[in-house]
Length: 421
Image (cartoon, rainbow, N blue to C red):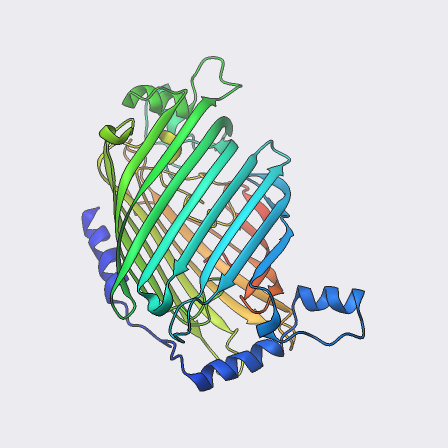
């Protein structure tokens, strides 16, 4: 397995950068003209309420966009709430990357209550980058067992763990997360960072598991976890490379981040563990005239190097930082101690004013199950298409509506704000 991890690291840090952004005064003026010619939801609302008013130029628009928070995917059901997103370049240095932040409070038809505050801030000149999130939630998590859909086990417990028939269980819990990383730019586009992450779950229960013969209980008892609660607290060490022209919807550039997470019992973690996490994204704009024609590639991986992880912290489908991987399956549909995910997406404009655009995408994922199936031995695909509605043209914020199909009859509609990657 480690040779594949090394390959991922080499790809992450030695991938050639295509279309690197060159920020000059002329290009900024040109970008402003292009954005002002676009049409977003704010323009639509203004035209309905004040049909004779003139559109505001980009510079006059607020960097903060409050909105109702509607979403849907098979994991959470229908979601309703309130949300605010913000995007702004700090300082006057034209090379400074855009800072973004978001906050939301919502409830879903499956009984999930979720509130968070996140930020990704670049100080003037990109000298520092601060990334963090606070989460408080009542979660309802569908569970389909360990692995990638194969059954190598002989015992009844092993068959429950690997669960090839994809029989679903439901885990209820309280969830709290505090995570903060601080990066220092050491060279153009290269940052090194460190931080901490506290992941706490309380009152965990499967209300239908009267005999405790479910994947969660079997895994927890085998590895010595109290099935009612745990903490996964660790230190983070990362290196990041980025040339993306926009964090919400990049037209070109590269993003790569690799990091080590070290969970330690002396800071409250239930068990010790060491993980390697990698995130690589590449964007190719196919047209100078219409830069919204984009081929985007994403690879995300997580590999347990030592120790053990609680069941609900295992890497898997939709367990990336933004919870957007694996469209076509519910969150954590496939999971294991080691996980590898790749996706390719084609993005294209539909209307001339860029109000509507579309995407097509295809993804694959693989994981182990610690019962015989190894990483890269078996793959599960999914794919689909989607519509984009331009919500805020100044920050390239899109409302995303996707339909995706996977194996085992998995399919669903996925609604969200901003691109999956």
